[in-house]
Amino acid sequence: MRLFFAAALAAAAVHAEPAQLLAPAPPPPASSGASGSIDVEAATRAYLNQLPAAQRAKSDAYFEGGYWLHLWDFLWGAGVALLLLFSGWSARMRDRAERLTRFAALQTALYWLQFLAVTYLLSFPLSLYRDYFREHRYGLSNLTLAGWLGEEAKGLLVSAIFGTLAMIALYAIVRRLPRTWWIWGAGVSLLFLAIGALIAPVLIVPLFNTPKKLADQRVVAPILSLARANGIATGEVWEIDASKQTTRVSANVSGFLGTERITLNDNLLNRCSLPEIEAVMGHEMGHYVLNHVYKFIWEFGVIIVVGFALLNWLFERLRARYRFGVRDLGDVAGLPLASLILSLYFFALTPVINTIVRTAEYEADVFGLNAARKPDGFAQTALKLSEYRKLEPGRLEEMIFYDHPSGRTRIFTAMRWKAEHPETWSKKP
View (cartoon, rainbow, N blue to C red):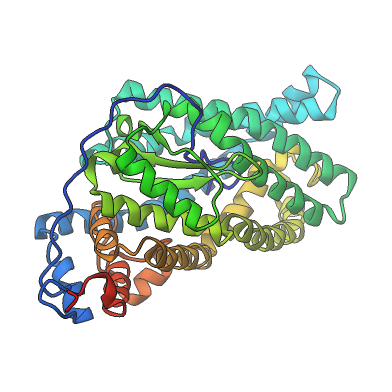
């Protein structure tokens, strides 16, 4: 789990481009109102049946394969950590850093850069398969191998810079406050999360995508009207060229404290109709209006505090038994052991974390339906998202593995909303 550093989608200003053609809005199934009445279950099934069987089998295979990849990610990372510990490699990296400088902060920085390079190289085969070959096999990536390697290099640079700062801060706290570090360390971790959300739209995203102001008033005008109606103070809409990397449709309202940006990726603009775009933006504005960023910070703050408390309790017991050449918790050579403990903790919490995120996503779904009032656009977008998400999982499967509501849940929610708001579709006498 990449907890501290994720590049949020946002942008900085460049010249506007000519407007692209919007996809026409497909007609809704007859059972979703075209016949003058709505049966929610029948309307949901009619939408689900629009996905061809071959496409459904392909997306099911992709998503279900992700279950195993999640396990392999954990096992691979655990294997790398154990290799660094039992081989004495981690202790030697610490010794090398200590020979180069006597300043603890610089020792931490030098160790982190070695750790980052070694773990990246040891994990590269799995990353190459997971993020390049597998994505191409399922038609979800537009990157050449050279382009993918360039993206990886940029991500590594971001991790080197911000990871160094985070490690220096965390290990300074561990050394100065050995008894209560897990409380203060959680606070610092949350601070870095907040800083990441603050600077990502301005500093990080432009490293990966070329942003521009969206000029097409057919799209901009209804989005800004929707934003104003929901108290989002911005006069601009941005577009990023995500199509150079992926075929996925996406949008977001990101940033805070003056860095807020409404951003659409060009796949959404090129592949979706205006009702679908409005439905997606209603959802994304829901995250902003419902303060999900701040709620996530507090909710994940509790998870981090518990995880650090577990680390504080378990680390010394394992170190005392196996040694590993690690002196104490404040020794950077113990980072692989700390990483292993936290990885196991977060892996075990996968259903809990997914439920937290999925609950917020469902809240944003409902907000978006009420704000944009485009249930058919929302249902059509759910079908497009099914290109890489299993459309109809079992109930337990959705609870454990899904960090968003399933396509079926989303379409059912949209059709139920539509049935209960006939003024949005029924013919007036």
